[in-house]
Length: 318
Image (tube, rainbow, N blue to C red; front, side, top):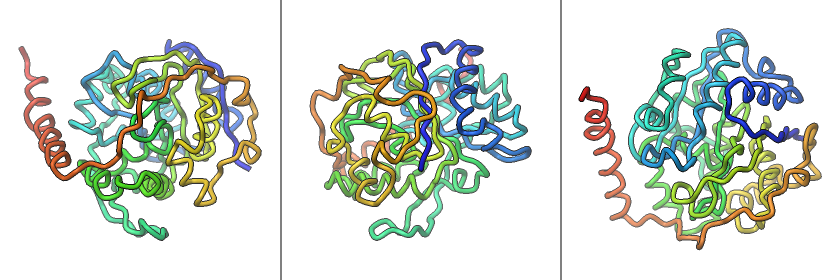
């Protein structure tokens, strides 16, 4: 039986947040049950974009700061990594206020590089994934609670799509996106391959409506954690009261026999029913996942322009 720890939390103030995170992880054995001295620990937040820093569409830097601090206190060596839609991990992190924590904690920020991995899957047995994620001793997945115009919700499973490097994500949208269920299965298989040791989801302030970036901040007051990313997603879907059948990742994990029922999950702190949100706003409409070839090419050039031209220009002294 999987365990999901859910907690009511309403502050990003670092001391209060750290106390909440320690309480959240206590039923799971605390951070030391995941991190041993000397281990390299990848912190994988949602660093979608640097263009909307006030919209709470990325994992808040306070979450990453406190988790990195806890990892260091356990003797681990944390580093930060992601593969944003546009730009570099460092550039997007700095645009979203991560500079202070990177400097204070001496946190390395890595860019993901792809490598092909064999994976036991009927449809996705060769996934090109981040070597940095696959080689890490520990992976801590740090997603954000968000609505999503393509997938209804983006939670822990979808956040691991960031471990597909560079613009390979856009090409996967093109290859698998014609079928929402196939795309959901690819996301679930990616999450299985990365196999995060721990997922902690940032739901203190979520992002509702036309996410993943064009929605609006929404205070939820929730933190969640689990060793089982699929069980954690299941719990958050129940909290938000979104129809399960509308979420391709949930449909796929259920079809593949992964944790998908509340009866299969132990909740040592709060139960999802105690934290339910009655009016979470979903996208105005669900858009096709398919990225046509022209869009993929434009997206690739935009990504390269931001990384090679705009980000270096933005950090030049003025």
